[in-house]
Image 1 (cartoon, rainbow, N blue to C red):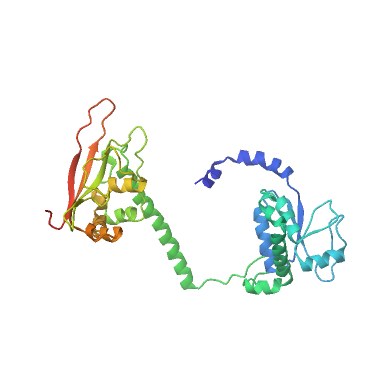
Image 2: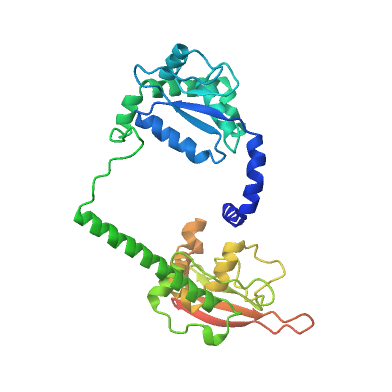
Amino acid sequence: MIVMFFTLIPSEFWNWAGPRLKKRRTACELHFDPGNATFLAFCRIVKRLDVLGLVRFVPFPADGEPASDAEGADSSSKLDRKRERTLVVTVPGRKRAQTGVDALLSLARALPSGALPFFWLRFPPFKGFVKRRLERAVRGRAELDRYLELEGQLAAGEYRVEPDSEARSFVRRVSWYAGEWCVIVLIVCCGSQVLIENRAVPEFLKPHNRPDWMTAIVIYPRLFQGWSMFAPGPPTDDGRMVIDGRTKDGRKLDPLTGQAPSFEVQPKGGFRMNQIWGDFHRRIGEDRFRTYWNGVRDMILNHHRVTGRPQDEIVAFEIWFVNEFIPPPGQVKPPPSKRKLFTHGKMQ
């Protein structure tokens, strides 16, 4: 959610920040083998991250072609040996070429993030590990191509793409249309839920005969769209579920509280419920959650297994939903009301 806010930053800000950030970064040249697919894939990643355009890509010279080194860089023979052994980056104005981990840090200094996120590469254990992996990757880049299945990539940086068969093209089209329709159905279901749940929506706009499959799409993945905790329409009622149970030894027990049933919505001591339990109590009494009542019954009948006390086994119970109206400040609070949801067994 926080990352999405970056899409709302106007382009004028980036145009202002880009040149200032670019002044703090150091340009460099990345030497790569144009005939190797792994090298080209690595260059693509760097190019994608190099939004400031400070990295220049220098191909290895072809066989028999003289090397064109940067001004003040190592001699061509020494540079060739380095490029065949490990990653090489040259920085304009510096005489020595950067290799291995130092080359990675030079690349990082040219990127917007800078080298700070890669400070751990300076410590010997990590530096030695990354250095050995870089040398192994560069020396065995042909084997790495085969391992990564990049052998079919052209030297120019393109991929050989075989034309799709008619069957594959058909499946791809069907999959695309199916995905688009799924998105449309999800938007319609969530849109209807917005109209149903939000109290600010006028009654004539609320759908009253929504198909059951639309309700299931909303309820099963919990895609509720109610936003009623803020002004000007905060909730004006509260409620909870009360289980009036009878244990095997004849006691009255509410397994949700571990005490005798109490039909007060908000007793003085409270119930110390978290947000999840609070939502459960307020919503379980609604008809749209009737499908969960069988699960509630099983939870109650297995209460003695949770406590480990056989005498806590509940043989019969009634489930009530207790509701109270919260009046505006200064008005008298009416007594709570209750309605029975369902029963199990024979109450005594």
